[in-house]
Amino acid sequence: MRTDLIRKTALTTAGIAATGIGIAAPAIAAHADAKPASAQTERKSGGHSERELNVRYEAQPNFFYCGPAATRNALSVQGKDINVDAMAKEMGTTEAGTNSINDITPVLNKETGNNAYHSVEISTPNADDKQTDTLRTDIVRTIDDGRAVVANIAGTTTDTDGNTHSFEGGHYISVVGYRDNGHQVKIADSANPDTASYWVSVDHLGDWIATRGYSTN
Image (cartoon, rainbow, N blue to C red):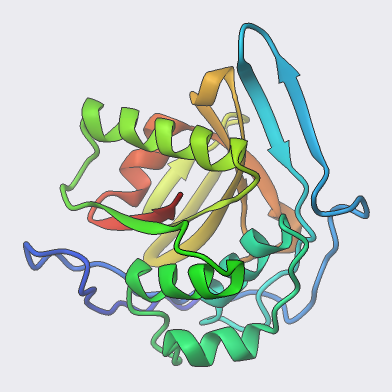
C-alpha cells in the first residue's frame, strides 16, 4: 500500500497546498539503458520534432526519496551518478518528503556546475493554455540542450496508452524526452521500475504540475 504525505511548499505565494512526497516503491534499482548517458535519439522534420535522452534509471529506495531519485535520474542523462543519500541531505528530504521544487533546483545547478536551471511555478489549480505552452517550450529547449526537466506533480493523470498514474500526496518525476514537437513528453518515474517510463500529453502534465512547479533550463 502506498503512503502519500503532504507538506506545504514555499513555492506558491497563494498558500496553496503543494509539495509533499510520499510514494511507496520497491527498494531496488533497475537500469533502463546501457548506452552512454550522453547519447540521444533524435528524429527531425523541419527542426526537432522528437528527442529522447538516455537515462541510467534507478528506482527510489524508499517511499520518501522521490525528489532525490528524480534528480538523480535527471542528472544521469548528462553522465552524472550522484548518491541519492547525499542529494537528500542537501535537499532537506525527510520522511515527509522534499518540500518544494525550490529545493531541487539548487542541487541541479550545483551538480551541473552552472546556473542553467531555474524554478517555474504553476500556482493555479489547472494549467491554462499559456502555462502549458510555456511548459512545452521549456521542455523542448531543456531536452535539446541535453538536460532533463524535474517536475513536482500531484493527483492522477492518464498516459498516452490509457494507463493511470496516481500520486495524490505528491511526487517528483523527470521529463526526459518529447515527440510531436513537445505535445507529448516522456516521463522517467522512480516510483516503480515496472512503470519506469511512459508518455503523457503536455496538457496532462501541466495539470499534473498545477499548484506546484518544475525545474528547467
